[in-house]
Image 1 (cartoon, rainbow, N blue to C red):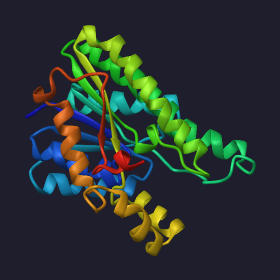
Image 2 (cartoon, helix red, strand yellow):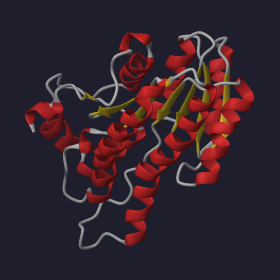
Image 3 (cartoon, rainbow, N blue to C red):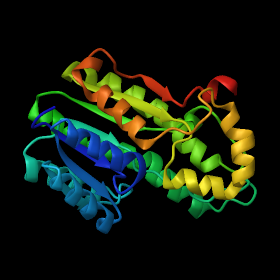
Image 4 (cartoon, rainbow, N blue to C red):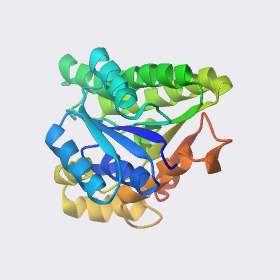
Length: 253
């Protein structure tokens, strides 16, 4: 991956940050995007301190102009785009369907589903114009196929990524662009910590973690390694696939 370019959305923390660091360690130049510029600048400084090359761009993935600018920034700074990781996402308001506000529904779908659509639209345009193929990894969740009470907006947005990923894979495969979906389970991220706060540490540790075959939550670095694999030549015959990295959680559901 030396001198290739990876673009990562939602890179200010969690899986996105770990993924940017993992690509940089492999020699790729990275463009990190998120709404929180301070955290992005800190990530860039960390990567550059280790000898890597990185650039930050403040981005709202629910806004087409912002996404178009993000991709243009990657091309202007590094001259190419080889890998795109669409990781930005929020859990939004967790509420019973009878109490869920339309604005709360729209916010989750705009970021988690529309945001991936917009990102792939402009990423694919850039990759097709450059003509050297590429790899796109969208980040879903075990909730791409499992629902839970009060999670209708989040679950619907993550379910939608399966259809979006498989359809775009079919469109782009003839041009040498692979598109896959990674579905993490319980991963130690800020979102994960908020979930613990909602259900309570005691219930989380006694009720949820024992259902994971590996009996622990995953690490962002483990998801990052999986994403890098899906973008690598070692995964050259993998496209349109949903890869579940959940420690065995969904096997018990």
